[in-house]
Image 1 (cartoon, rainbow, N blue to C red):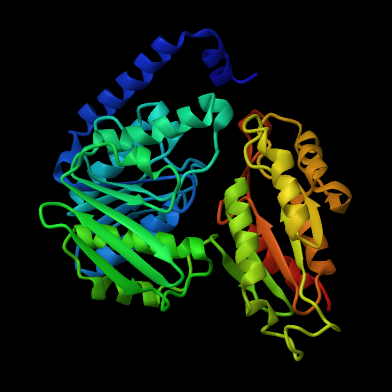
Image 2 (tube, rainbow, N blue to C red):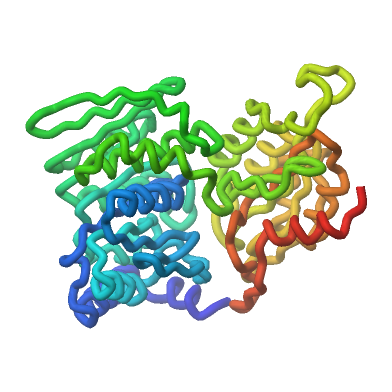
Length: 425
């Protein structure tokens, strides 16, 4: 058992909370409370946070505003950017405050942060003056850590309780009503029907904006929501709809998020999806899209050659959220012709036990391959023209986390490229 787990087991919660709170205060004090000199935008939700941060950053920069952003993909301060290799979506208190201080020194006016429920639980959001709070969506995640979905949602709510200036809420999410309870100077509420987006702006002069979003190039209906959330942030900062749309028309993709790594001899997609809801959205997007037929000489409805999905997945984060393992397997079994269950980030748990739990949900379809590279290679060998190989769980993450704190360099996208070169078709 690791030291952190021993601490959690034997130290009372009130002492742990005091410890986390004290670190947050100390970090902010040491770096001079840098958020007071920035407009800080916090993005929370179960999925879509990284995409919203990336898109919003591009919108702000297009408007000529110096911006810093911190996501699970990368750190960025003005023109300088570097990969997030921490394996943490929301870093510790000292790292966040240091990042904000660096942003101030670089002359940035804006800072964007992904805000997680785990981060809020550990007071990492404290002593950061949030000017804008964004909700993307909410579905079950980190249930074992928080104790229930309601507590998980309550953690997210604390960001909106803290921020009193601008709230941006996805009205199509069934949990939206909880986030609308808190007062704010302005609220941007958005909905999508087909390709039409409606944004309702609530302030002294309430107004509604309707517009078509068909020109956005990102795959998936869920990315339309992410794009509209980014537009709402832009509008809240006085950036025109035209500038927002111009940026979104230029963006072709986000690293590790529905990223098409190869189109020949078949399509290979890498995505970060690691929750049941996000996995369904990925599979639905692929099943309902026509791009997988781009290499075919036959019509999509041809009875002689049908496209199929070959899926590689595991379960992120050994030691947590065990409930979702068979659920993920069941979803893969429903949507995919071939299911390969493999290792992801087992940490101190036995990786084969995790694989078995995921595979149980997929039933007889599941192939269990411990070595993730071999699993990817097997998927590529099974694929034929018009098929789609879908590799989920890690996205653009640069590490695989093993027992005793050991990490090995990893990138699903690079592994795909290497294996495609070695295979002869």
